[in-house]
Length: 498
Image (cartoon, rainbow, N blue to C red):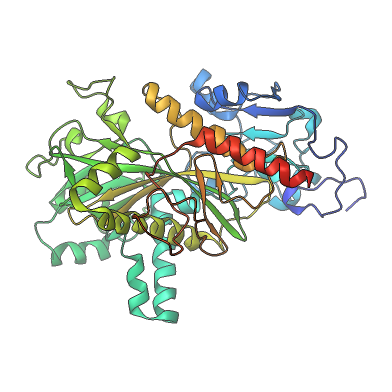
């Protein structure tokens, strides 16, 4: 390799030179591929300046209704494992290995060709096309780890959780494996159809739910009780045939439906929890205090399993209901939910339920810790969807790599604005923090190569009189983020001066 050859950011050595230098007192230059709350946050942040650049793949497709040449399909595994733009045009294969293409066959995305940026909130399609060809400087930050889909595609999420559960049982025993009992019995179709049929026959009459592996916002989901309702995935129907034009069924997951969800006002709900991962090696995880519960628009009943307004809580589904109220939006804040549950079931029962959410977060991230391509330039903000059953047991429904940042109302906007602003505070491109903080605004450090314990003055949700150390987890607790930030930056400044 020649001396002047540029290599991808994740292959950089510590001695890499940065012609602009580490960010100091100068402005921070950013790019953003979305037109919603995150763009408002970036534009309103003091000392941050937007830079123009090439239009993202997602924006191009939205404008033209077509995929660009050499683009990859969102959510498909093949779109992320080594796919790059091919200068010879679509449909041809380059003989150069993927890891070398960025600096042998294809000009890398450099600061000159794609904007002189420090921070990029990119979409997944752009990352899939450009990650292997990028050169990143020491200080640059970009949204998404390269193979984030290992956790956010429904079939791969369950596959990785099952693998870690088996490993845990093998090394630590069956009892320890019970800590993974937070996702319903799940199979991938069509590849595991025959295994599913055996399970189906063991439990006649129960309800199952079908979900596309790579779609979001509730699209393509349906419930069923009879095998004939999923004839497209019948054993043998999906086997390769001589006809190459035959359409292969889309990959789905089929899960045992949770028939006893916790109900409030007779309605089903799930909880959106925000999780920030800034590193997988070591694993460093932040949990946001605020979130929301999304309610169905219609009272729960198992008599009408075809009614999506009863069984699916996605806002994209519920907003189309005839009696949907856009002002209320069928949402409660996580703080409202925690107060309601505590008043009805007691503080200790709710504390145990929310501790179960912490377990879901950590176990799911550990299941992909050795698989995700760790890169110090990358970070990920996940949207976890969690459902409580009638016993207040939390169940993992899915994990979103791109949780919606479009606000449905003023309260939702305020939540997401604070969430994103505090995310930038955690990343600290301005270098104003000490790096030892356990709380930044609404984000609490949950895990850093091990569990984090709370400080004595940070125990708003702890029962009165508690003095023992507790986990640094405060989902749904009081969140005076602005006051906390003022005190935090004042203290950090004093420490740095001394």
